[in-house]
Length: 616
Image (cartoon, rainbow, N blue to C red; front, side, top):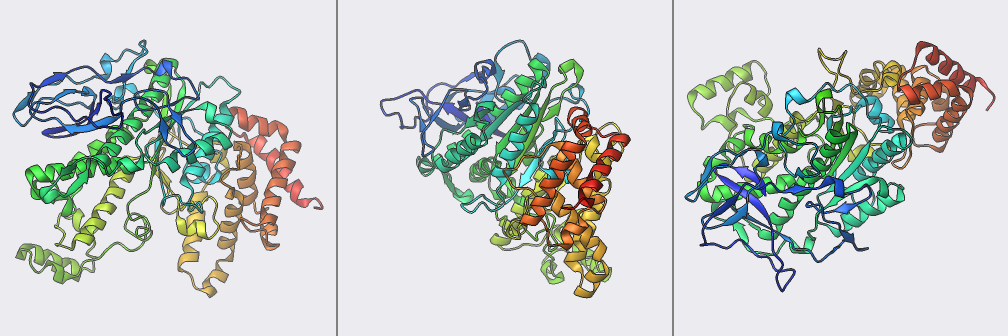
């Protein structure tokens, strides 16, 4: 099946026939006649029950304790479509007439109108949903993580990036841990109703440690039997194997690494197809976690290197090196990111919510980069000395107007960026990749290592985290947040960020003058603080945030009960238990309707005030 189409070349992933040596890679034969099949590579979602662990073709897998895959199935190989090759061509990526190495390929594209939702089979690669097939995102998906639900809410049918540094032995930002808590909360919140919620987790990594870590965490959370898990069958030690691909001016990459990246893309696509099948055939909701996107970028780099070898650097990546965004790369990533959808009534009314984890290249260098930090690179006027006079004149005008010569400002007025070192080019391309992913998504949750080291839990950076659903003219009918939280949170994001800005820029004397803002910040931090394995109901979030907004947590802070302290945890836990007992009707109202009436809010406020007024 086609994994990537870089006109006029397609890159395909082949499932090999078994040989005497099960580990031996069998590349396509060269020199024989070319045969192109229109058969779609599909899976049978109905044969994959909840709790299954499968590969990208839907085959059941057995995973050993060290994370390695134990099975007697053939492994995959990658290739380009070349003269004399015989391959199965997956047409679901929308390829038209193309040609390469003298072969003329005319491929019929798969159209959503041709889709038969009554069949048990579904192609792995499907076109993204049409506008005519989707409705507005108007139902919240409560994560059970207060900081996310309050600051970056997620709606059913939305896609959301989760950005952070790589998880390591000490946990770091713990992206995977937070997302498994998210997954567990969704499962527990829907376990006893008729919501038809199904959960899917696609792990693209070829690392045995990653596989065993994921499965152990799912088991510890008690949800492994509630999740369909799709895994890569590759192993790290296979990445350096095989012949070298690419070469020339584009560099080389091992066939093993190329195959690992290609299978990762297939894993993500299969996970989405399973979720889509559930949403379209039952009208239910699906949530998909793709962990993570890095190997998608690796496959893009592999195919770029091959194209550079064939066509030269200027023809392939020159625009990128000059700071221009790649529409081709955006299309490549959109094929995954835009598979999220809230389907309209004609398509069953179900939804596919897509959570995409991303460990971005050089993330330790990007904390203050132009992806949301304060220090975007600034050029010196002398950097433009070798450019045409017209460009230098425009640069002089910008300098006189005191406009910073940053890549963002220069791209806005279409001034090419000056030549830089290879290292600077690589960093700029990495930052550009961050921006492209963010611009294609419905929002991002940025987990910051520095905040994690300070004890923030979750380490969500509000200045770089946002949801774009419900922003703008359609906010009345299109919202991602729960109505109950909406009435409680109000202007929380603005107030919280304002207080954070005060702490970032203020001197000691001005902090004293802004004591009230700092106090409100600390109160909201206390209300939103929770551990990565801690579950919260929507009613719990409303109680804690309402207490913070009404100033009831100020006394706790004055006594040293800051976020992360035992005293702070005891205060919040005691408050939630007290209100659940004394305002149980309102708690039930929130959990069943996701809303909070004005009368119910009054009862909650009375119960909260009563808790803090009693003799503790």
